[in-house]
Length: 73
View (cartoon, rainbow, N blue to C red):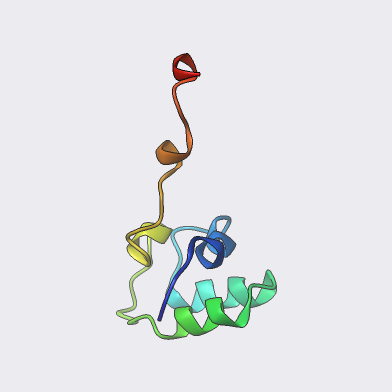
């Protein structure tokens, strides 16, 4: 299983929190690439919902990392 920012971005609008099966269903319905579906299928399923993409891919940048201080321009 490997994630890239591009692949993980397909789950940005997923209905969080979501179970593994719900994420797979969302990925299929939203037209995510096969790599995203395969990565989701490889997740361990303990029956609990994932709260956010960070639980699936800890390196996913938070929204805070996208913003910068306008004073630094």
